[in-house]
Image (spheres, rainbow, N blue to C red):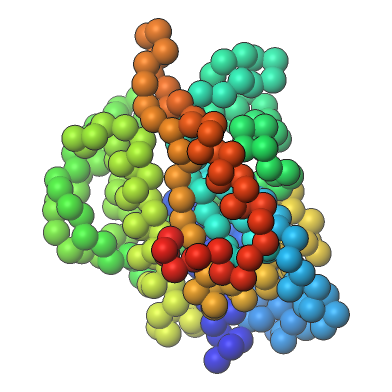
Amino acid sequence: MRRFLAGAVLGLLLSLSAAGLGWRLLTAPPAPGGPPAGGDPVELGLVPEEKGKEADRTEPVYVLVLGVDERPGDPGRSDTMLLVRVGGGALRVLSLPRDTRVILEGVGEAKLNAAYAWGGPELAVRTVSDLLGLPVHYYVKVNLAGFRTLVDLIGGVPMYVEAPMHYVDPDDNLVIDLQPGHQVLDGRRAEQYVRFRSDAMGDDLSRIRRQQQFLRAAARRALQPGNLPRLPTLLRTARQHVETNVPLAEQFRLATTAIHSYQAGALITETLPGHAAYVGPISYFLPDFQQIERLRSAWQAPGAMDNAGAGR
């Protein structure tokens, strides 16, 4: 059973990445001729036992997850950004509003989601690291097509849609048409749910709140026993839609550490502190640097659970 749960958590982390939706944190392909993906890395022989023990070390690692809408001839923008901390205590996930005002190298003042368009995932990583004062070195990039496919593979995600959601953007090839009520969202409708932002609040914070709700609901769905046989397909599909600079050996360690944290119920979801405001004619999300300093202290400090129960 432990083996199944480990694989389920890995599948969950992979499947949620694209949503902003979650995290591809991380699995590696099975050894040639070895057991199928989707099990405990140590128990399945993918990681030597001594390396599995190293996974329990407490130093945190920070991984930036980018949900990118890729199009032919256009680098796209990372409209969904999450910073994930693995190790050092609870598994922590920080949502970063795309309109956050930052200074981009060689560009100047801009919105955070422009970092990917100007300099790819490398510039996005450096920008987030500078913004938060944390040593972010790794990234995981997932496209929307992968998100839709992965949600379908886990049988959709049960959600309560709190209000009608209607929006059409022909330039973005985006049509959102959701009715209120309890329902199971397939990949296409799940994408609509997590991308919608034209509600009464009208800002990115309401969308982030929905994305975090979706993340928790998808976690419950992915861990259902009926999804266990789908894990090998889930993992193979995820790898087709994921790009990362995390070394293979580090993927094993992070995956094992994330599994241990998740099984212990140590998961915290947060949003970058700040507020929306206009600077001249441009609408930004202005970071609250005093609160960010407090957040940085919490993310750097090692702790068994980091008061995780309050943030799940």
